[in-house]
Amino acid sequence: MTTYFISDLHLDPTRPELYGLLDDFLQGPGKDAQEIYILGDLFEVWLGDDIGLGEHQRAIEALAKVSQSGTALYFMAGNRDFLVGEAFAKAIGCQLLPDPTVITLGGQRSLLMHGDSLCTRDYGHTFFRAVTRSHLFSRFYLSLSQDKRRSLGYGLRRFTKKRLAHKSYEITDTVHKTLCKKLAKYNAAFLIHGHTHRPSISVFNVKGELRQTFVLSDWHEQGNFLRFDNDEFELHNFS
Ligand SMILES: [Mn+2]
Image (cartoon, rainbow, N blue to C red; front, side, top):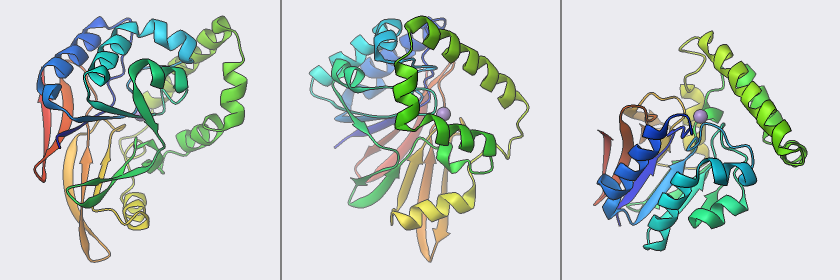
């Protein structure tokens, strides 16, 4: 079984080259994928399926083609596209996954997350996450007109971008203690996540057992993926 993990493409209609990079991945390095896990922030912003499916049509069609050809697609939402819904899942032919999700890789329990919930030093985001990830919030937001959702959504993005520029490296990074707690709680050998845009592979000891963490990169001039096959992980950039 050849499995790929990608995240943080931040697809944005004002940056068409990113859609090109997704096409390159699906027709290039990801061509032999039997499974593709998308671990959040596939889109820079998702304002509801009715808006998003139109705005990101190019990516929707590319992903639908892949699932139609027999590759299993899985999608976990990130902090920018958490309003992805059933219409999106149907359009690309994927299964929506909760955050976190445990899967088995080479017989080992593997924890998949977007990663923002590991940044527990970022109180601002932790609060924002708690408020916006409630059913009440999404019901309210999705009941607004498309125009209202656009102005609120883009306004919020401008606000969070400005805030992020003032946050320190430590605040926006994952917290080691939180990470260890999660690995222990889910009894997982591996943790795979994105969000921080700080690609790395690290090994450490949690309660006497070695655990391994894989952090995916965001996509800009280059794309990035983690590949698992024959009990081996490879973290790669491509362009
Ligand atoms: Mn994120």
